[in-house]
Image (tube, rainbow, N blue to C red; front, side):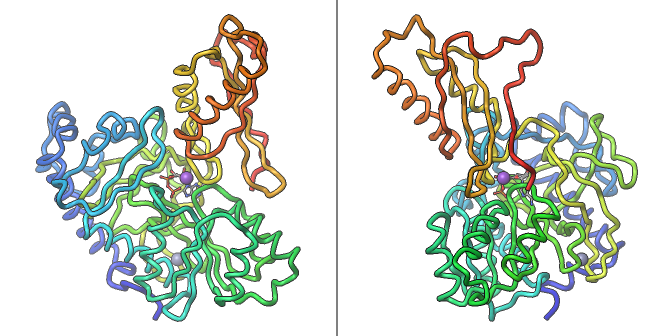
Length: 433
Ligand code: ADP
Ligand code: K
Ligand code: ZN
């Protein structure tokens, strides 16, 4: 079988537009009726869901930003009563609180079907054994992929992250044919497999890599190290999670499932960019029940590609992600905003409000984040124990907010250059992967 849901994957253009229009109307009505945030936005623009007469009328609708989710933390943008929510996930917010997203039972099912489409698209089926080597928990990557693997009928190996040698043993012992992880962890796994000299003992055919940007040279490296085909998986929690965009076997851009999302590529002024130009991906969900989102500014930069594809799917297509429109950093697949770090630091005593962030790639090819902070000498007694305590406090606070470990470097007050304009706080020394 070539398609998981052929009706939707290969829908003829006009029919697809018609479907999008109906679903857009329904979504607009749902948020207008159930989400005060959207009701106010619609009112202030002087529009109602009835003003949507064509898909292009989406331009009349308000946009949504990550800060809107934060301002309505935790459940303020949910469009259904809490009893209909069967799961939540969370990702990083721009500062302070995380962004919480919710799912109804139908949402979970839709997401799993999208995943099963992706897996079918790259040639997987119920005969496959799929190792999901990402974090399970509040992040969407774990359970998101997991449910799709089970829906496909393949055998899921929920290995999670860490313990690389054990991961490779599992691949070997269980006859794993497909793997999902971040591309940077993929590179480390590949290197370890090479060192162990067991590539020919593996049955891997397919790798799915996402959550952070990666290049075509990394693709070649992963493909040759594992003897696989490597595919790009794109997504974001606000739109469900991973898998809302995925490469097909043409390996030339990502299909975005157009029966579930409307894609706009906008310039800084909010206009659709000229054909083939780069712009910000703006997504509107068409079927999400728990958390419908209108014109979400993803902050991700890409190009729109022609929707015709040799694989026969008729969805919208985009290039791989080419960058970010804001200052969001991606560290080990986890989104980190400098403002989040600032937020943590200002609340800690005995340090000044100056800081710098350094990003490096360690020997395992994994990201390392170092935050340099200044000791406030007035608060410092000169005891060496004091230093250790301050460092520990800062590390602990950062860990609890970022969910990754940051190295903390304490320096003397005045070491970090004061700037008169926009301070340069981030020094990304990682080579692109
Ligand atoms: P995920 O778990 O899918 O990474 P998050 O909501 O935590 O979900 O992060 C979403 C962000 O991660 C995206 O907006 C994008 O910046 C980045 N991202 C996800 N997948 C990719 C990818 N394949 N290529 C580049 N960036 C990606
Ligand atoms: K991410
Ligand atoms: Zn295709």
